Length: 79
Image (cartoon, rainbow, N blue to C red; front, side):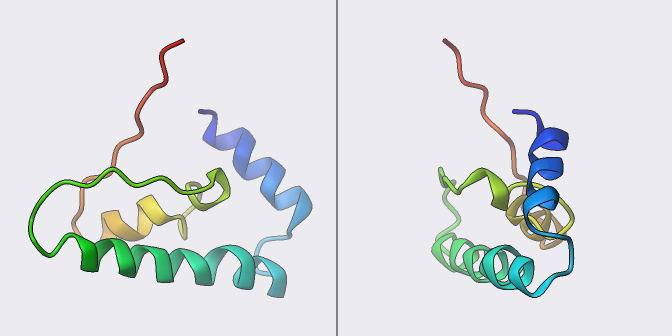
């Protein structure tokens, strides 16, 4: 996907740092990343799907997991 375009579309609808962005995106990203980490306590790999707004930026789920030492990668969809 095009992360830059998704980020631009997101910031057009919800300004960065706004109350709405924090509630709808940033705070939910923290909760989702915590749940993902808990589910991985057995050391096995996981396939996790989240909405695209939760994938981009420094507060996105991949970034939050990466800061905790997890390797996150985007899978390409072949048509």
